[in-house]
Length: 365
Image (cartoon, rainbow, N blue to C red):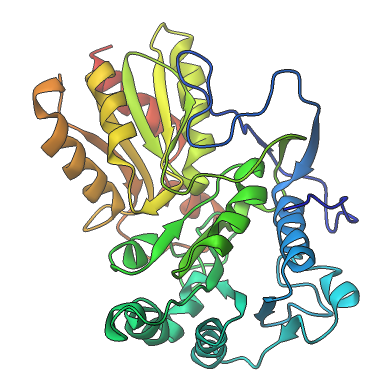
């Protein structure tokens, strides 16, 4: 897909910087088409990267439509679709009623009918109102039709806490969808993945759930001019190391990278693996990393009980038991509804000091 020129940047200045680098010990990228050396880069926000992906998709394929609450003239709750309604019109960028079951179902039907819908659900908690459509229809239709009908729909939603939106709008429920056969679940954590995961998702013949951590929209990062489509079957090694493997995704990736830099100051080189795709999980890359380092930690903003961290830890233990020098560790969100007060909210989420302390305990330092 072509990469359109950037549009105007809405809102305030970027709140953070995303490191899009994905390198192995030899410096080669893992899971993406490799940019050539010396490629020019530009700094853009995660929001702008998503907008470019939408615009390129609309330009390149007449079957692509965008639908959801306030995605048209308002530009979406997080301004991801800002300007697209004016450029492509109401037949390609459609506002929907405030009925998640209704418009997600409409998107699924449109996909079965031959379109390539991008359905925006405002936040993950609202997706619970469309759970029947997603789990009972989108995920099962290929099977129930005897392989006759695919459902090529992409359902985007904001996830995660950290914005003082309290208990009802701060969930991390990626694991609920990652549990379901028939769905692909992805979580872009960098500007490059925000730009290039969407075209890969649209090319998938089956439903894709795309989770965007809401604290990342205003964050900025480098986008290489020759970056290209992402392999949705592969994780990415974001930092090389030999002392332990830290598995993270979405909103926890930058915390893991920051912790790894702090640990490096004491001679502890942590390898940071960005899962990116939460279903199916790329076991091979994770297990190869753990086999090299001998220790593993999983950082998950979701609750510890029956979550993705438990699944990843179990897979590592099953595959790498004889390589492990210590039990797999987990740093997860506290088992409470997310509090509204900022200091309590931050206390309920995985933070860099907890990651660093857990890493030190793993390596005995």
